[in-house]
Image 1 (cartoon, helix red, strand yellow):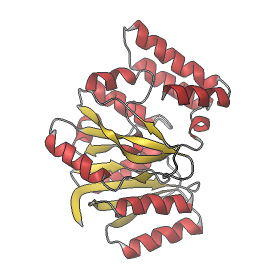
Image 2 (spheres, one colour; image 1 turned 120 degrees about the vertical axis):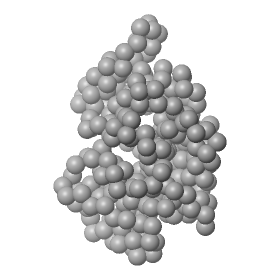
Image 3 (spheres, one colour; image 1 turned 180 degrees about the vertical axis):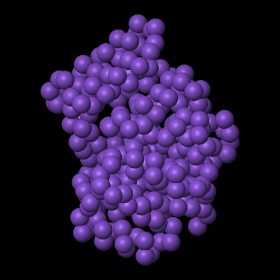
Length: 267
């Protein structure tokens, strides 16, 4: 297997589903161009089943490192610990309940090699509920051009977060993940755009994204408040973008069924 100078960070916690976790790890282990390191980042205490998965993966694959954080510190803290310990030129995100396409890392590394100005790179994804091979998976697209990515941050995320790969040196310019719980990625993109960071998305679904529970997680009042502060801090004089910004926040207070309909129509 060919390998690339990539560290893949997979955070997990007490709510992680063991079977989904195994699928996520194996989708990285079985890449056509494998990573140099796989960080399994434990955020707080976990079940015996999850501990068993980690021990087994460490025993069978020397690339696997177990990063254990004392006490639950949150996603930003977990990712930052992994980034600081990676030591590779590229760092890739991965969630513990998603699945990477077998060629994901190979295609992202190739894109970076062909586009040296790009520092943060995501991909499209296929959303699924239970089986990534089911026929009703939805192709989730995000913008591929810089200007559109900067504009869309006013009301949506310009990246599918677990698909993102970074040039590790970009963190020296934009800083590590901020501590804003649940909107740490949006805050990081805002900071990156303000500092002129070049970004892109590959117009190909290289991640299978598990959609269960997404709407509910995005509907808490705490998250809505934090997201509002981020979006209004990322200012614009465009009436259209400001209207979309307000609309994207207002829809979060609607009943979950209506939110799901809006999401399905606008995603």
